[in-house]
Image (tube, rainbow, N blue to C red; front, side, top):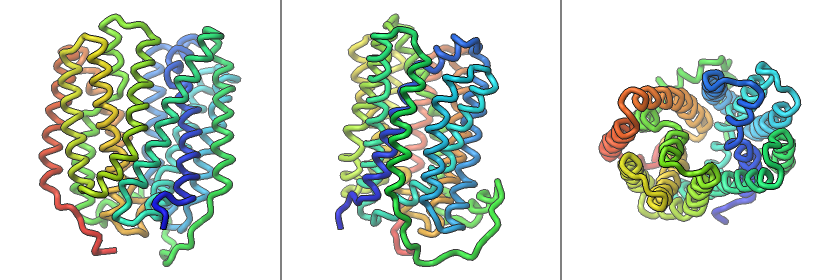
Length: 392
């Protein structure tokens, strides 16, 4: 059995294209929204609601996917909605339409996340989870390198022509949707009796889920509460007086490191254990935030973002691999969807929380608090048993 199967390749390419499309717009989104008359407050509310939509829908659609016993339709629909949302933003500039397009994009993410990760999980054994999720994260993140790089290139030749960029972003989106055509549904061994899925019924899963799952997810969510948006890290660099292109350069550099390391770290995690690598990632994260609190040297920022990329590679895919290893196969999408749903809500709270602390006590306090919290979570996670896969 090849570790990286055809399905894993297709899903990874689909993620690569989708991420290229999204990340092309990520650096320019705030600027574009301002040019069509959005205030900073409105941008914040917009992002918050879009994220909450995606978050809550992840649990629902994850459970729906498990109950129906199908994955591929969710993946196809989810990526299609995200692709369609890009050109809508260029053609309709009324706040309500922009709002609709952003929410459509996030809803697409909500529909596909649980089903896609369950599909990835079914292509791996517990011994190869790290590399399969690592490979997918790696390809996904290359999109975050390609996207901003293409955007910078385009804006270099056509400064401030944001609208066309949204239309260009539709192309990789279309490629992603075309690639999903090649996905085949796996025959599931046992179909679960049809259960009615309501918008919050995934919360029942929390009660039924394995104890180790709840313990792990609680740790991950506490970490998420303190792990604010990367925008704050970029703001901190901006305060040292660096220009916008260098700033986007740092962001691209971080994603490049993340993309390059996600797969090898996944392979390593399969050898030394997912838990060990995850804890190492948290400690790195704390180190980066302590460094960010006190640093003002541009070269050192690149060093910190190098470590930050490795932290991301050691935690993001690894967390999902770990979750699928400690939960039942038949509930894989619900387990991931429930975690991802709560995570979206904590992410939203995290950025408001950090924003308030930054505003009241300054960036150093905000960063040090985050670093402390992540070390506490690392200690907590080190007490968790490494689940064996005996209950499969």
